[in-house]
Amino acid sequence: MKVYIIGTGLIGGSFALDVKAEVKDVEIFGIDHNEKHLQEALEAGLIDHKAGFDDLVNADFVYLAIPVDASMEILPKILDVVNENCVVTDAGSTKEELCEKVAKHPKRRNYLAGHPIAGTEFSGPTAALHGLFKYKTNIICEIEKTAFKLQEKALEIFHAIGMRIRYMDPVSHDRHIAYVSHLSHISSFMLGKTVLEKEKNERDIFDLAGSGFASTVRLAKSSPEMWTPIFRQNKKNVIETLDEYISNLKHFRQLMEANDFEEVFQEMHKTNHIKDVLNGITQNENLKILENGK
Amino acid sequence: MKVYIIGTGLIGGSFALDVKAEVKDVEIFGIDHNEKHLQEALEAGLIDHKAGFDDLVNADFVYLAIPVDASMEILPKILDVVNENCVVTDAGSTKEELCEKVAKHPKRRNYLAGHPIAGTEFSGPTAALHGLFKYKTNIICEIEKTAFKLQEKALEIFHAIGMRIRYMDPVSHDRHIAYVSHLSHISSFMLGKTVLEKEKNERDIFDLAGSGFASTVRLAKSSPEMWTPIFRQNKKNVIETLDEYISNLKHFRQLMEANDFEEVFQEMHKTNHIKDVLNGITQNENLKILENGK
Image (cartoon, rainbow over all chains, first blue to last red; front, side, top):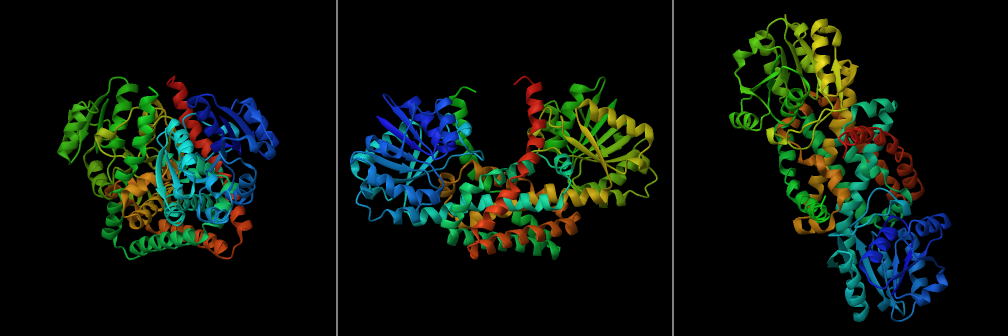
């Protein structure tokens, strides 16, 4: 099977690594407009060969892992080129606009809209990790619009690398993901900004900040190249989450201002319940660690 | 040396563990109004003996690790009881009110105001960890108000368990720490609240949230018993940080509303610089891991 990875960064590179390890008789081709990245991906053994756009006619499976604004340009062109037995799937963090973009494409049935809930705050081929997708959810949208045989082909690969599947329509996907992913990034970026503006002396932050701050601000290391188009595409939902977040922060501030510390306590106490949810998330990580024998 | 730990939770318990491991001829006594915690601390070997308040007359070193409102009540009483060669230090996250509270105490010179930048989101004796303080900063306030011989005694112990020392006046401490610690906790709690309110179905959060969300919301697991009095004592500074944070979030929202995604990009790009700061923080963690040979 000939697998083409378009965008050989953290996500594409990690996907290549695992497919190579878990799927038999596979040959991996990389396409990237960044020649340096492509060369790094080849040297790191993420891909077997460099390829060009025209080679896609030979592909059995295409994995598109580039910023979501670029996907809007590139996905229709990929569908133009691929043969009828090829399945094209992607890793974009927004799904509504992309699904609309190709809704009328004559080869719509070759496309499977995906979003793996996996990643780190790093980017580029050197950030690729073995097992990044294991026990992670791949959200698949509009499954009914993909040819059945191609659904099967894609699911076989997703299962091989250990992913769990969840089906969702693109509108719901973008609304939910605004809360559980996009908002976290903004809260983290603005926290980083607030502290950097105040603490001009980095040594102070370094000395005074602990692992709690490091954890909360970790996502502020994320790539603006990747996140700007996500916020643009999911603008309506992200603004809604921001409004609710700002309103909750203002409420907390007002409780403090009014010396209502009994309510301040209750606000935190009620939210402690997030523990159960987080235990669910980290359980998957623990499963992975156990299995790796670490 | 007789070391008394008042409050045998995460901080007091971890301190006891390391002092026992690193300081010679030490005997550890625990005092806790929570009898269950005290018993757990004894059974886990964090302390050698349970003790009562009156026994403090025999103490050479007292470590006070209880919520900051309780410290306001208890610290003067400890100073009333201890002998003149005993140093009393604490782990409270706010320093201005406590330093004021004991400013005129006849035994002020027996007190050393401290704040170790160490901890986790867990609490209680079962959360105690070996090496929690290693390479962490202990912020010491008003060092000049502590008797010189007692400064020496305390610093010897702090060095023995691997802490770095930083001196700061209590007013500056409370202002800086509002930014690099207290604000992170509120941003995390309110993020957790916003998501929990929206996603009534926990399964959705579990499936859709990744490690990024888990990291950003981790501090929302923290103890409201500990944090409510911190916010009360540091109210003025915390409200100031909240105002700046809310203002930065509103600005980001406005840029999105106005479709100024070039500026949205710049906001994130400028904040990426937080990487360098975080590398500083994690470098300490890495040093520790290297040294443990892991």
